[in-house]
Amino acid sequence: LSSSSGPRVCIVGGGPAGFYTAQQLLKNTAVDIYERLPVPFGLVRFGVAPDHPEVKNVINTFTQTGQHERCSFHGNVNVGKDVTIDELRQAYHAVVLSYGAEGNRSMGIPGEGLPGVFSAKDFVGWYNGLPSNKELHPDLSFETAVILGQGNVALDVARILLAPVEMLKETDITQNALEALAGSKVRRVLIVGRRGPLQIACTIKELREMVNLPNTRADMLPADFEGIAEALKDLPRPRKRLTELMMKAVKEGGDDKAEKCWGFRFFRSPVEVLAGADGKRATGIRLALNKLEGSGESARAEVTGQLEDVDCGLIISSIGYKSIPIDPAVPFDPRRAIVPNEMGRVQDTAGLYCSGWVKRGPTGVIATTMNDSFDTARVLIQDMEAGKLDLSVNKPGAQAITALLQTRGVRAVLFSQWEKINAAEEKRGKSLGKAREKLLDVDEMLKIAWS
Ligand code: FAD
Image (cartoon, rainbow, N blue to C red; front, side):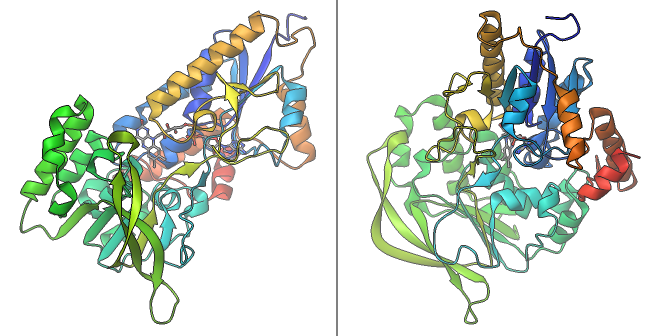
């Protein structure tokens, strides 16, 4: 092993999993990160709600990693298309897949493709400036919006739809989303779940934000809460506090003079998106009423045969993100929609690892992603020290990949070049009185990066 080489490791995906895995690996080895977009940070930039700036402070830590002398970031490289995993494995001793969950679960119901129906992933991408969602143009001229799913993402979407524009205008929400929301006619947001109040998947912070939204009251169905008061005493503490807050919202409702409202609708599953007379767009949704079989977290929703139609012009399905395979050479479990692995070691493939949502599925906050990324990095280093990665072979690393990409007309955006995009966005934001105004166009990003 020559002194200039040493182990070479690369990471696919520059979101939280990629950066946390890199942070840990950098203690032992140099790391290259390949990211599809010209800009880093994954869902911290394109997922986390604009009114949660404190969550985005992790970017400071990621930036330190990105600036580390032994870390090199290569944005604008779509792994699986621009370069294959086998090519990366040829060039590196180990490859870590941290490419997140870029797909979404579909409802699988008739009418799902009608105009007026969006996945939460696209809707969130729209207000957060994801280039592929910049032309979404959701029609906000209807009074009622229905969100399917009751997790934190659903509540983020509900809050953005109902929040006073003053609450958003200094955040990094895109200017076009802000303008659309300023003209929005949406006054009522129903958040639908298959099961009951005791199975709801959101956390208390997000629920409290709904309860405290100005000019907005809670509109729930008391029938959905039958028997809940009696069940309270046996609940584990976090679930108990969450349920108590929900019960309070049911009881108090909130400001009678409020112009807007939101409410959970429990025990309901989507059956069909209803189209207007011309069949051209969504005008409502048909829900099946459910009853619960069993109790607690494992209770199952069973249909009762009763149906209910709700008029609405905006339907957002928030039933989960989903990882997708990016290269046929990598094992993929289509049922669980993850890369099958044991403690981050990809099944049957020495030298290939995974971390983050692609490793364990699209649930959990950034802290969860951090812990599992640290775990993967530790396992990789253990394997290296145990001689499981053949370090006696010299590997060319980024040099070879950059040359290969060049022959394919692909040029990477380095971390220092992202910092130019960052500066341009902050500057634009400043002139609008906002934290940042994101660039929405990849070509414009590239122009600034390489200027
Ligand atoms: P991602 O963040 O998705 O990162 C994956 C990266 O890989 C992306 O940059 C992507 O562009 C890149 N990539 C994809 N395919 C390729 C490819 N083929 N080649 C190269 N690169 C590729 N957590 C909190 O703690 N607080 C919150 O408030 C919060 N809000 C959230 C709101 C939403 C709407 C969502 C969806 C999640 C939220 N989370 C929040 C959870 C948090 O975002 C995740 O835990 C975390 O982002 C998962 O990290 P990851 O790196 O696995 O995936």
